[in-house]
Length: 483
Image (cartoon, rainbow, N blue to C red; front, side, top):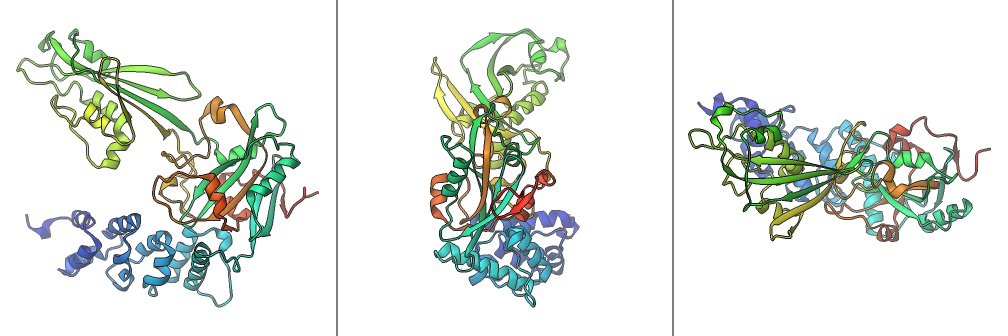
């Protein structure tokens, strides 16, 4: 088979594995290669561009817009995710259509930040807004945004869209005043990171009270915890006993791995001593009692003295899906569980002990054991937000994004928030921020001390929480009850 006989889809997948500099060179080798590289559907440029954006290695992207072989829609990702310094000072982006600038503005900024000035192009509007953000992040100057707007969500559904002078605006002090007005000064202030975008994050300040309080704010819970979006804590307890040998009947392992059926007939499997590993997988949800299901993985020998792989393949696939699915996707490699001497089995003690997200310990008999607690999403009833576009740590917003960053609600069911509920008013504000490294924990105290708060209006609230539309009561500009 010649290179010309390969389908263009396979060649595009191969090209997508190259670095940007190599992909530029490949596009100049032959006309067929150039046609593949310039095709908007095949688009082998997306993977290396996203890798450069995630690794913050942006030098190769500086002159990419000057090359006609690159499909133009790739620059929407660059404009949406690259740093302000790179886009303003280093990137050459003057040859892009206005539709690309409009789409990039919708993905990167809040909708209320758009200024429809007469005679202003889409490129100028995008760069003006980006320059204001870079200027505020680099200095303490707030001349361009002298007034900061914020939202107060009351328990009756009333919304106050208020504003304060940017230099004196402190949401924590303001919320303490709101708590005093509701007779909730004795409760501590809870600060939650709702969602974070490339240059701005949304913060919610509220108070948790007992469920019998008449000040319960059901709208606050609906905003932070969208109805139907749930998360579950799954605790994986892996204990491996390589020394214990046990006797089992010919049909024991078939019953344990039900509904798996063996390739061999029941008569070809003889009773013998086998080495086995015991895996206990516990799925814990705060709304249901703890249940333990024991799954046995055994290897039997057929009449030819070879291991029967068909008996355990489906059952072990279930175990690997439950306990190793996320890690195998991140590490990019998986081991073959069918071989009994394989040292890299996903549930082997060697692999589990070296996992960065697990804690290994010695059991009472000196046997290795691994305990791990993960918070996973159990449902995704909402369409993932794209305008504006959240960062990777909130990639599934408004649904729950597994990891340590999405902490809008804690727990589930009756034990959510330790049985407490949101009470009194809730203050919503926006804050400018730098692009932090992945898995950086959110520190509420240091976040509020940084300042640099940005306008957040009712239009922005509906943009990031579309399920709240038609749920609110009266909207009031400024303070007051709207009577």
